[in-house]
Image 1 (cartoon, rainbow, N blue to C red):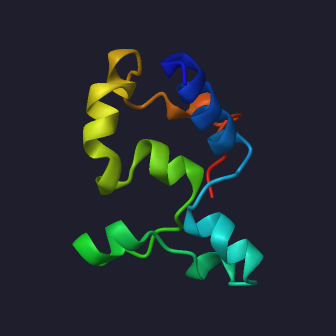
Image 2 (image 1 turned 60 degrees about the vertical axis):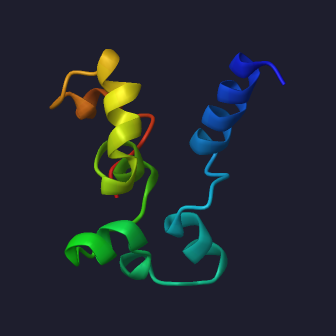
Length: 90
């Protein structure tokens, strides 16, 4: 598979909510939204943060290295409001 195609597919799944985040898994299982917490953040610092696309992309400790490697090449911290149309805050 072409590497560019691989990234396009991954981003499309992410934006279309076709992912394994608890926000989506909980929706399928009728779990209340406030109980769809991020397992990584809950285990590492006992935070009850909803595991949403926004959280995974900008805040989750599990994706820190990925953010440092790819996102912060073009992203200026504090401007995530510009991306709110793509990843609405929970």
